Length: 406
Image (cartoon, rainbow, N blue to C red; front, side, top):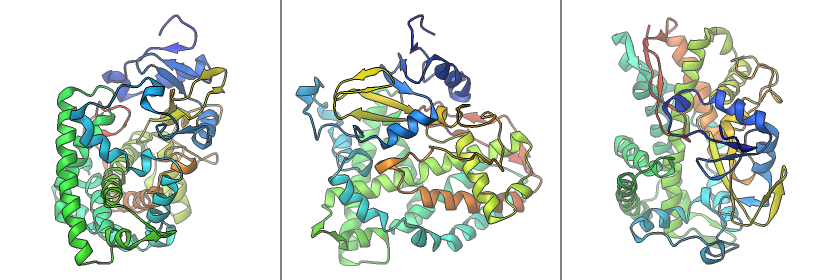
């Protein structure tokens, strides 16, 4: 730790930190509500109250170039070699602000309202059983590859109308693209992400063209047909939206399932009691999302000069909201480092808040509420076969493998 007040040094790519970041988060919080994370070079907020408030604070946004130019902010131009990636990002629901964000989200929201998501319950239930049927006879499995990964990617592909047979290819493109968000990305990773972006865009463009001539009852067809206030999505917006939903629609849920199973097994919790009723299951899932969140850092830009917790910020300054740290804040949670599946002070910021609250949160929650009880009921003797290891991919937080036996 730096000797400078309120400054903190912790390499995000450090293996030990990736395996268990929570002690470092506690040290951060001890410094105060705002900490300058030297490795990133911006101010971060590790407390639940601050993170929750800043997620909703309209002085901050995911984008800032709608209120200031690169020249005004002193930002360099995007290198030509990276433009294919950032051209896609420019249309992303996650990277836009009102009024563009409002229009895009209104169109996409229709697919993720609770009534629409609830219709997927039979499909998710059947899929969970099908996957377990495949690996149960073996007596052991890597649950990340055999269970946690296929469920969300197949479900989001079904929802969009993309063939489930494309799942492996979609995952490959997605993993290569989201590597751009890692702390320790390299030139090779950047080039690979651009290549994946171009291939993903080409596939989606051809698939959208096909759906224009042969619409079906899927999200892509509905987005093609959708109008809001007389304004259609552009083809580029449509393609980016589909890519975002495929990327974000599986990444966090894979980690949430894996992290959740690991937490239950390591805590020696009783799954039969934790998932005994629908209400108990909802509470247990929220606690698992709090205890070991799949996404640990969400950044914002100051849209105007502002002061937060004594930190003066200028327009264009980046800040970090530490979701994983906020979820373990002792000022908000009793015994924050203990998994309490029937916790009464249950809450979390794992899906964010405010206008950028995760649009797929209802679907992710439903997948967890179905997949986890099915898994523990089908495999009552489930136990760890090896020490689980997290991937060194901060700011994501998910397991490389989860080897279990029963």
